[in-house]
Every structure is written in C-alpha cells, then in structure tokens.
Amino acid sequence: MNIPSQLIDKFNRQITYVRMSVTDRCDFRCVYCMGEKMTFLPRAQLLTLEELELVGCAFVELGVTKIRLTGGEPLVRKNVLQLFQGLGQLVGLKELVLTTNGSQLVKMAKPLFDAGVKRINISLDTLKPARFQKMTRVGQLENVLLGIDAAIKTGFERIKLNAVILKNRNHDEVTDLVQFAIDQGIDISFIEEMPLGGIDEHDRAEAFYSSDQIRHDLERSFTLIPSTETTTGPSKYYRVAHTDTRVGFISPHSHNFCETCNRVRVTTEGRLLLCLGQEHSVDLRRVIRAHPGDIAPLKQTIVKAMAIKPKGHDFQSDRESQILRYMNVTGG
Ligand code: SAM
Ligand code: SF4
Image 1 (cartoon, protein in one colour):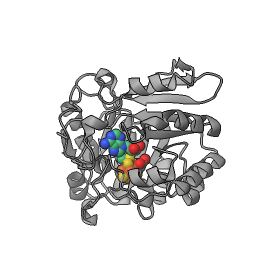
Image 2: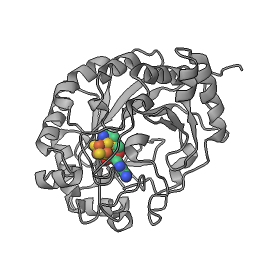
Image 3: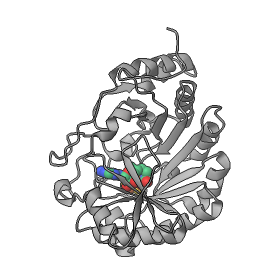
Image 4: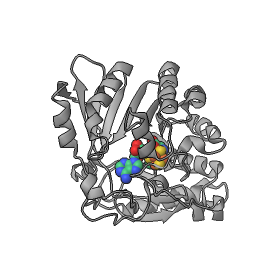
C-alpha cells in the first residue's frame, strides 16, 4: 500500500487534529465525568509512553499538525513529561496542547512549557471551595487556583478555562467565572454536559443548561462581540468588549460542526475513535504490538480507518448515555 501524506476521509474532510488520552486515571472524580467508585484499566491494557509517542509520530507523518494530550488527568501519569518532550520534537507538529484539571500545574507548568506545550486548557467549574469539592468529589480548589497562577506566570501563549455548567449546581456562577477569566487575562469556554458514560449522581437531562442560556445570562453583565475567529470544532467564540478575554461556547448537541470535523481521538488503550458520539473504532494497540517499533503498519491502519469515519454524531440529551465509554477513557 502506498501511504499518503494526508488523511482524507470519505466525506473529503482532512484530519489534522488528534486528541490522545494518556491515562484513564485521575486524582478527581468529577460528577459529570466519572462514577464515585471507578475501576481503572489494568496497566498492560494502556499504551506505554513509547507506544503513545509512536502513535503521535505516525499521525504527524500523515499530516496531523495539532495534538492534544488529555485523559483522565494526563499529568498524573508517571513520567508523562517524557511523552511531551518526545512529541514536542516532531517536525511538522505545529501545536502540542494539553487539557488538565490543574492539580499538578504548580510543579509541572514550567517543564511542560520547556517541552514545547504552547497552550493549555484548565478545567474550572466553580470558584467556591465547598462546591468545588462537591463537583470533583475530592479536589481542592486552592491547589487548582495556584496551578492556574503558575501557568500564567510561565508565559504560555494561551490559557483557557473550561467550565462544564450544570443547572442548579453551578449555573449561577457563569458571570463570576467570566470575571475571573478577565481578571487573569485568560479565555474561558463553557461546555454543555455530554452523555458519555453511565453516571448515577444526577439526571443529565435535568441538569442540562444550554449554551444559549449561559450567553443570555452573561449578556446581563458583559457585551459579547461575536468573534470572526473560526474554529473547526463545536465552539463559538465571542470577545468580551474592552477586555482581552474570549468566551467560547461548546455545544456538542449541535450537529453543525460535523461537516467540518477535522479530528479523531485515540483512547488510553489505543483505540482510534473516528467520532466522539459514535462507537466506530479501530484497535491500534494490536497493530503496534504485532509490529513493535514499526511505524509503517500503524500508518496503513490509520489511513484505512478513514473509510469508517461517520458523517456525524448521534447525541441526544434525553437518551441517557447510549455511549458507554466514559469521558476519561475517551479523552475529553
Ligand atoms: N482531567 C482533565 C480535565 O479535567 O481537564 C482532562 C480530561 S477531561 C475528561 C476533559 C474535559 O472534559 C474537561 O474540561 C471536563 O470538564 C470535560 N468533561 C468531562 N466529562 C464531561 C461530560 N460528560 N460532558 C462534557 N464535558 C465533560
Ligand atoms: Fe478527572 Fe478531568 Fe474527568 Fe474531572 S473531568 S474526573 S478532572 S478526567
């Protein structure tokens, strides 16, 4: 098989962005992401750091220019810095980015920056310590705020907060969260809860709080100017007038963005997911372990997988969790 230098699917979309989950483990247990008692994957089922790097390298050789490392909490994986350093050196990779809960940033911000990470997304759903502990079940707000501060001082090109908003849980804080982002000179995105993984802590349909509602709430305090910035994702951006802060709204329930979808995901176990909202996947781990260190069969498998990337997703907030994967395994 002749291996192409670009990944094009059958709807003529080019894949340039890969999100890789480096671990399913986490030091938090956010109520919308996990159950209280989680059984994590046995270590042998996870891709090793070397295997993850090989996957990243294969994608970059196939024209991918952006890799996001996520999890679980990527920064709790032992020696994960080694992976950032390896990926940071790949020629052709323009953006190496990270999504984190911020708990490890006090010590990790500087080494990540030195490894080549330019942008970070940090999750923050509330500014109230007791509420933070309730929503994460175990997290300490103070630690995350110190982590955000460390990241700002390190000088990343862009830092963005991610806030999942749940009705009657933290929807009353959207204005305070935007004000916090403005005060710190950083961006913020609001995320609608997605039906990934079975959870019993709350009813997802009842907790649904739409992006439109959030925007409406914010417009009482801020002037939001639609940004001309286009993203090929499910986000819409606005600039807050007279500030440097952008506010994004991520509405995965909207189908509009599937047409321009440029991304795929790789799970902790090395399953290539062609669409977040569908079960189509290909087992890359099997290929890697059958041909250790050989990148060619891996690239061929990825190229072939493009044929099964579906046209769009199938989320419905009222049909609880038809997708059984948890977000921490998928990589949010
Ligand atoms: N642990 C890191 C963190 O929390 O940022 C990275 C992984 S986490 C799965 C990535 C993002 O997904 C976080 O911003 C988190 O709030 C979000 N998330 C988790 N479960 C979700 C769900 N069911 N619906 C929408 N967003 C979710
Ligand atoms: Fe952990 Fe992130 Fe999931 Fe929260 S959202 S439990 S921090 S993986």
